[in-house]
Image (cartoon, rainbow, N blue to C red; front, top):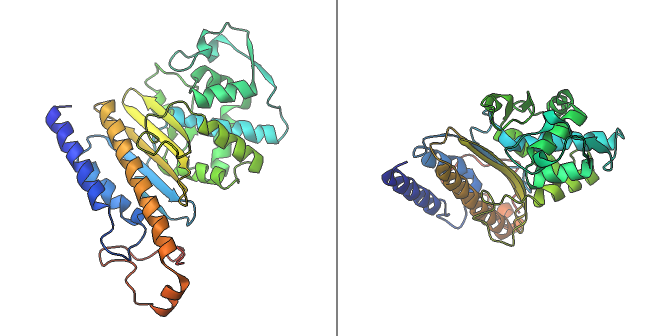
Length: 324
């Protein structure tokens, strides 16, 4: 990408970030403008992008191409983890179960288990930690073999994930992996929202999975522009021309779930810049939304029905959004 193109893109990011600020005292949550902001940015992004943001307090969502099927890359490891915990809950095995490494499990693209000798065994607990925390592909393939691809796909279908599909093991050097591992920003957000509410498998499993995601050691995408004290439970994904990140952000008084997916990137620098910008915007929007909710009291809404909570250019208020 030329310096001029990067400069133009950077300027577009800055303009959109400035425009996201509220113009009046009574405005909707800033998330309501996020889709428009993303479209403004997207005109300057020569790549395929998709995102979804869910406010956990209100259930309000904002997205762009949220239902579009995209290369999942390593974000597919979240569905794998979910099925492992589902079978743990069903009593098919426990965290101490040993799984033997086979030659066909090995993938050298990510992680360190590929260097272990064939025949060595690892506990399910160890494999989960390696799969999520350092995105180990070999550990992932061992867990896929343990629980079965069909079971993973069936569970995602039961949960309502229509764009999530695992057609083969994780193979870094296989170009077909772009088509074999698929999901959408909306699917990832739905899955993580269930987890955040303690409703994915069961409450204990949800907490354990969140703990694993919080330990993710790859923090160069969604977490990068956030304050260091903001916890985030997330999973990244990367291919040659693809960067993804999806997670639960525990912002004070404004927890939210976010997934940003990019593919057909001319450079990964562009993908990182885009994900950073969306993460920064979503965080600012959520904080503004939380402040807005605390400023609007029941007395104000009851006695002043004509107060313009939404400006003329905003969409019709979501009736599920609580006016407090």
